[in-house]
Length: 364
Ligand code: XIL
Image 1 (cartoon, rainbow, N blue to C red):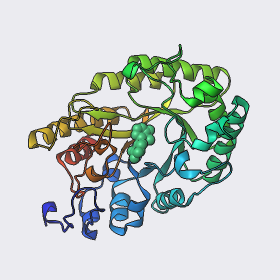
Image 2: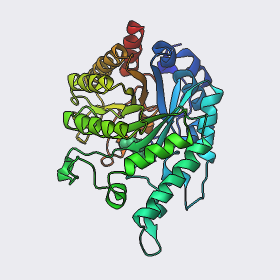
Image 3: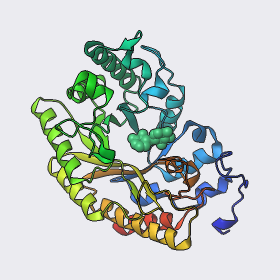
């Protein structure tokens, strides 16, 4: 039976989870299988998807590594000091374990989706000393809770900026987040030390967007050298890779992987998507065309081929979402049309899926 004749409920985009029939999961070739064990394939998932039997089967069939899109961020886990709700996160982490998948932990220290209570003290702002204590306790509690079940943690996310939108940074290019502003640049070191203590066996990553930008590559490498000189463990770099059809250049991505690799850092592609618009923040398109989808597939193939060729340095490639109905690009930077993933709004494989599958098979 052709994949286009799968039974789906025809609901308008965004109103409900697309229902997929159970044969779907088993009949589509598995990317996890095509990638093999040396470089794993995975996706960012949401708790509701794991609760849906058909979607869960689809995810288990396609992935050998998972990350929670939002469920393991501080804003999702903690409503107050020492208060945690691990139910959604545990659901995903246990699902990964039960299906033999690795789990990435995303993320402990970020300027967005932080737990708002952390920065407040009564009516005012928290002191440096107290914020450090709160961060250390949060990391000890959360990493401790998942100890042995989370394979790698994005300890710090997006600490550097490239001056986008005229943003002000410190001399090192560091974003003037609440963490940076209240604690100082040492917030990174403190976070990595706390994570290493809480789970000595988990891999500790620094994760960022536009990680191929030469300016950012150098800023991050310098940060890593500084940490290591102080005996702080940092194992890897996460390349978010939120891309568009015309950005970034594959050569720049290759050079960044080489540069971090030369420092002996493990690397993951953590949040891959390739928008149909020319640039990630373009919002012009209102629909997909065959030509755009073919071009997107070529981009996916090119990047997959690059990543597979670097699998001595790169351990995983995860897409940021399971299919086009769920992409964050639909609401970022504003509400818009996009279709940046490998499966369409009804979870049917797109040309990009076939391109990635072929590129992976060709490399293994
Ligand atoms: C995004 C999620 O996809 C959205 O659902 C949420 O509203 C905002 O965060 N970089 C990251 C991810 O590290 O955590 C972000 O995820 C996308 C950009």
